[in-house]
Image (cartoon, rainbow, N blue to C red; front, top):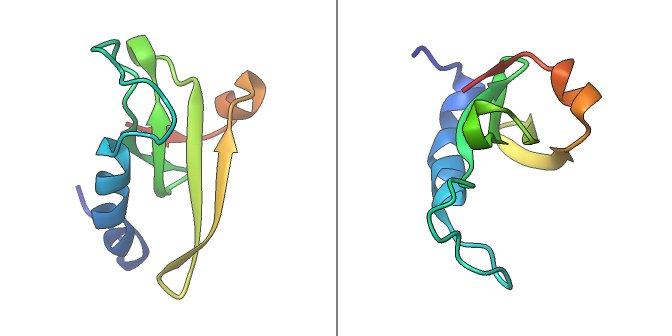
Amino acid sequence: MILSQRTRGLYGSASRLATMPSRGHAPDRGRGRAAQLALVDGDSGLVFAPGGQPRVVVDFVLENGRIVEINMIGEAERIAALDLEF
């Protein structure tokens, strides 16, 4: 996979984020709900896709190599309109 300069800086952080347990939530217990790294409209993000069906997308907005906004998208219509690669 070829990563843009904008994408390269995020992947280290996103991969750690994808494997970190959430505070205040029960462990997954093997149900496959872990986030996967994804390209969201060509930029770095995460997708929760049990059974291969995207249910929640996390889209990162970057400026000057720093995350300035995080959008969590859970509406099926909005997810369907995204260009996702995971």
